Length: 219
Image (cartoon, rainbow, N blue to C red; front, side, top):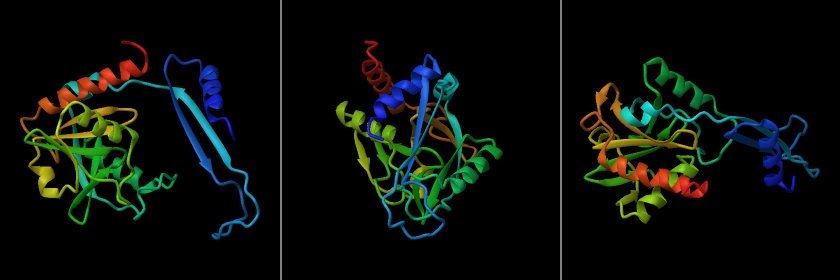
């Protein structure tokens, strides 16, 4: 496949949605069932799905959401984006079953990320997020949030977050491509800060929305 942008454009046209969510999955190809790499040249397999994009419920940002902490049971190369998502699915389901919307994962006493999101904390107006490593899948939205913080003078540090620092945070956020940046107002059924979306999140969210509007030519 040499022209992914053209295929995406055609998929969006065929979908006919006002706003679309495009997902592309590429593997190295089809081979006999052996664990070693095949010796013959491989033809990549490309699968793309296009579905209607549903905007996040406004209440997610107005009131914030609840999360729970769980042990990070995934393999040790979480920086590789693969289709092996069973642990993430089980961890997210554990959160939903407890009345939360996301699981914040802990490994060896440190925050890694969410089951399907990246995590940020705020202490004294300074934003922290775990650094890129094999422990996390560095999301596009995560990187954009860091970029916007630096661009607009919001102090931000990429560093490890101990579990204790998560529990005494003034604010907690999670980010993903489909839900943007969501404020966490309850952690393990206890309020985060004063239990409402914080001032730093409100500032960052405003810059995030403005960036998206500029990107879409709406400003």
